[in-house]
Image (cartoon, rainbow, N blue to C red; front, top):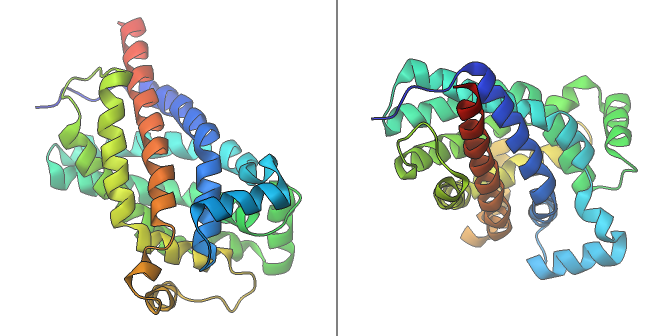
Length: 267
């Protein structure tokens, strides 16, 4: 049986620190994943070489500004919401899955505009995150920043629910868990959840990166991807796993370590 959840201020502080570390460290992998999913050609190595040739190393960090400035508080909101839902729903795989989906639904209100700007910067040519934000508002209106909210919730919600269900089963039951203990559990949970939800993430990205008002629906994007066979649905899945597993591993391990240190210092 798991111990009592940590106080709110501990969760907020630990999750803010972990979100910042994981976002900065793993953003280049996210860029590769987004570029691969937005097209139907090339491999991971081709994507890396093309990006280096055309944009240089800075190309891997396109969209980092938006992802960091708003993504960090969104990450804090996500972790805090998960703990709140878990308090209400209790322990068990089904409760953890539902708490993960609920936390994502709350965080997506803040995170979706960031995700739209980040992914457009990664796939299209903008001078900065602000340039992308300003251009989208001017040409497509505020609603464009929430394009793909439902697909994002389908994709991230499914990932989040599966991730927490897996992680909570692998994680030691103590309130305080070290970085070394949390890392392999988070890596495994992140890899499994990201692979299983890769088709949903691909469809979500293609809805969001389309410029203009005549973009495909979430279902149409899935159907179009499936026309290339099962491999089409899992386009970029390997890159997604390479991003999500280290990202969630670093984020969760840092969160657990920071939470452990903060709990120790407050006791």
